[in-house]
Image 1 (cartoon, rainbow, N blue to C red):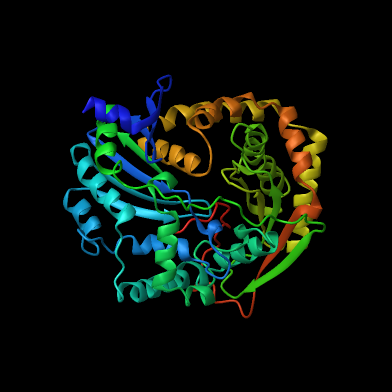
Image 2 (image 1 turned 135 degrees about the vertical axis):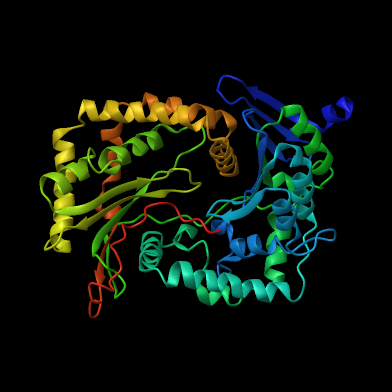
Length: 461
């Protein structure tokens, strides 16, 4: 067995300095794998990440990545439709999947002694999916209903969708992960199978196993179940349409009778976090915390909510884990009797004051302390660690990049943050949206409670 395993692995690297030992290896067929050891509980998480998300879709076929995610539960030659999830549940585990712009991922959480069971089933559907002539139509109705519930029925989701479309004129990041309804309605079984054959192969996947396991156990099981799967010679390079230079600020007014509390949102085109070059993304990550990470102590929270009383909620968001350029987003929900133009003016003044006043050393050190604490706490969340490695490797990063990220964050200086903010806050690279209530307001007893606008990247289960 040891001789056979040695022939199946191209590379193997161990990273033992962290609290959770991490081992990285690659099978001969190109499957990249990460093992994160945590022996505190007899539980294991298996995740398989495919380097294919909605941003890799062909124009006119939006939603196909998420559609196939649903169809992946429809069975193989040896598994009936829905059997994988039933087997996982019968063994006391749970499973799910999710699709984002840059990847699609599947996972199971189960007792450690059941790892072989779930690995066998996951490997089976990597290459042996079967979609019956009836299943594809039924599942298409399911994803259309999902869009109706999660997007069409949610004004904040609709606003975010329209805002991204205005920000990204050519990049696929301007198309919703779930897809445009009119294109989803035309998706076929052949479309799904073509996507599956193009991207679902061991050399386009990342396996992450975290929990009460050893690297040798995972290597042996991976060699047994994933090792025999043939790699694909036809995986296309990830060359997406690029965004042309944005030359002027873009503005929108979004009206919906279901908006209970008006608000202002603004996004700026922002650089992504790049493999081997993460410093600017780290500075923007800290900038988001400084501006809107904590309502009581952040720049916008302190100035707009507690000092001026112009707002009841503020936020700032940035996620650089992206293959192409991303966005940095700000939101202000004004106080009663403060209109949206005044709220926007207050936001602009607060940003101007930020550059004039500089960064408060105590606030900067507080965020550094939070970063240190989060690094420690993250070691206690094996599933979060698995997701961190899987997302990064599926997005083109290396294990070394993931390991370096905490230190890159800690190396950021106030000067780095100001430089990143200066480059970021160019009005010509912004989209500003006024979210307004349309029509007659509902009675107070029936009106929904105000909901803060979400700034998290889109992902669909």
